[in-house]
Image (cartoon, rainbow, N blue to C red; front, side, top):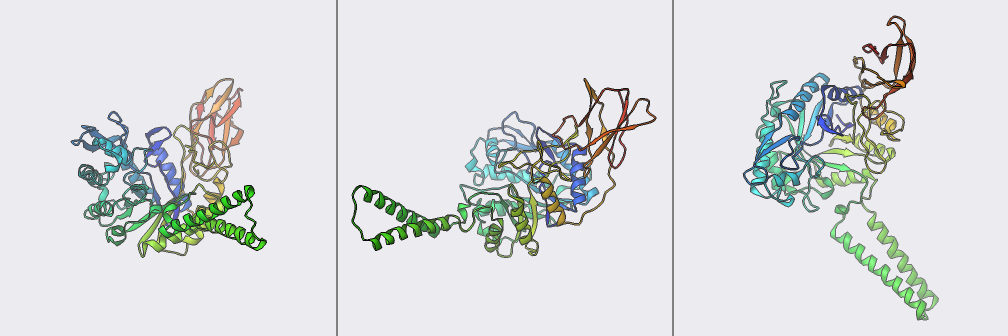
Length: 476
């Protein structure tokens, strides 16, 4: 379970926001299975952003007051129920973060607004703390309508993460908040892990590292300057070196207007001090952890956490060589329990793939990997190959594609539901449903709901598409 992908949309789709279908869930699970991956990290439970928002995992009565009451949205939790049933089929376990720091799907700010309070109140206001604990308790004690197993007893939930990238004013959340959530979970669930959802770049609370009820801490590695890795002494040193550099710059500018008549040796000394201060400043600023050296970050984290397990919950949006170096550093170290590349998206029920553009020109990944094109990144094939190389690939009896009714304009336009792990499809046509001829072949590496293949009008009226198996036949 060491190396895999984060799969944010296994339980709900975000582009556009809608429940994930069984086909879409199973497609991603089939992709993970073929790559040999047996644990994945989904994204958080979603929180309503307003009084009228009833599309999230949580529904609210008395919104905006301290008397607000929370309940679980049956529509979205039915999707999570079904996902856990499917996990049994593909022998895959989930890590489930409970709440987001960010507001993509509603996070701690939206949760605080449910009670008419502010984001900074989330970790400390007794009503919010009690409300969140009540929510966690509801989730733990939900009985899965598909399996009959309560979530707290489900062996296919690997662990609960207290949140995604949680922090408070550039520091870890209060340690007593994190340990209170961990204690609540462990009091009911003995076999599932509890993972600290602190954004590790801000460090880890001492209470967390000392708690026997927290099995692992987590961090995410992206390209950024980690000022939290600097000590007070580092900042003092940077300030002094900057002052020295600026002082000598001013000295030299003043000399241009009113020469100080310094001897050559003294000028060499002045310029030498200036250059040395600049070099020292650059070294301090870029040390110890200026991305993309993810290996340095890993080593820094391991020094902080003692014997506690580490989960790299997200890593990515960086050159393939940077990810490769990180994997090589992780491989021999069993203290790192799991590492998840951000992120894998699957087929759409309407044909093609869900795609997601990230920052710095990166995109989500899709199995088995496709050439760069609209919605598919330059490094997709390399990243899929890298993650797969650290796992034992498995074969699977795959279903056939499903061909939709063609759209006829001046051409005949085809869409179909693809098959996990298939990169090429053959399209056949026949005028009489007896003798079929090959019309062409193509991949389905197109964004959601786009036409996948077109042919000019002809005498052909019957069509099917073939991958590992033949699809249904359609007639126009």
